[in-house]
Amino acid sequence: MKITHPQTRAIEACYTFRVTMDESDERISFLLEEPSTLVSSMIASCVEENRMWWEGFLRLFLERSSKFFSKAYTIQQLLPIITHTFAMPNAMPNAMPNAMPNAMSNAVSDSVSGPSTVLLSPKSIQIRGGTFCVFWDHECESLVIDIPVGTLPADPEISELSEHFETECSALSDLIPMSPSVPVLEEFSLQEIPLSSTDNATRLHDRQKAKEARLKAKLAIYRAQTEMNEYYDKYGTDLSDSDASDSDTESVSSQK
Image 1 (cartoon, rainbow, N blue to C red):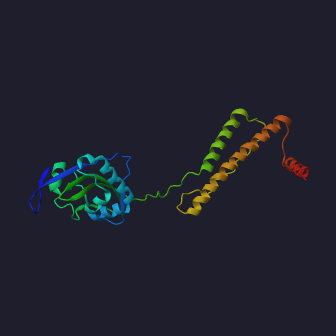
Image 2: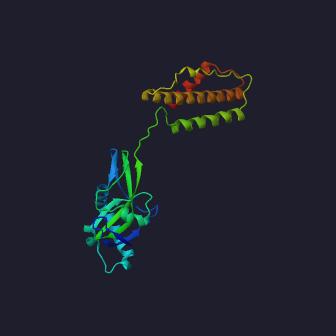
Image 3: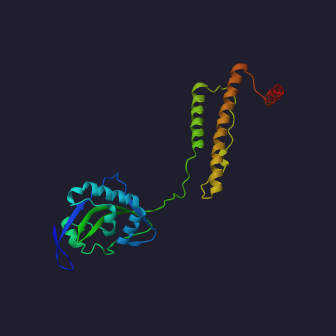
């Protein structure tokens, strides 16, 4: 298209190439640690830091648009005349050349809160008056760290122990009915262990250990009750503490 130069008022040709990128295409980015206003010099610095990516993009552009040029140009020929600026949001393509009369200037764009990552992708290329200006779209991603406070992650070992305990208790109640003549083991009060919530890391750790000990103790009680049921079913006599002591002594002697 033909446009009028904003300063010299001379009529000059302007060629605009639109750039389309897929979501999977790699983009370049830079980090803003503090709230800042985006300026074109930031793009130039980012392009320089990602020189391999930038030269690959230029090489692809020259290959796909070669039919529009009178001769084959090289990347080295383009680099000295390339300028960068942020694309105007919602700008019409035909209005872009006059909307940005001096693409070589350090054009100012919108403000970004920091810290943020600014992703860049080329939107269009404009060739006019001996300049090669690239207009860039940008997308900002805030760098926010979210640390959950007051929550305790589940311990996989405790969860596995709890599931195993529930399974064994269910099996005991279904397969081994309690005999009326068998005394029931008294379960001591495990609720006396203080398990109040606290933000102290050491107490939280001890709280988890206490829960694990409680589960193991309950499981031991149910297993002992099962052994007593089997003893009464087989011998039909009472099991005294002295019997248990003698049995334990004999077991130890045999091991020696």
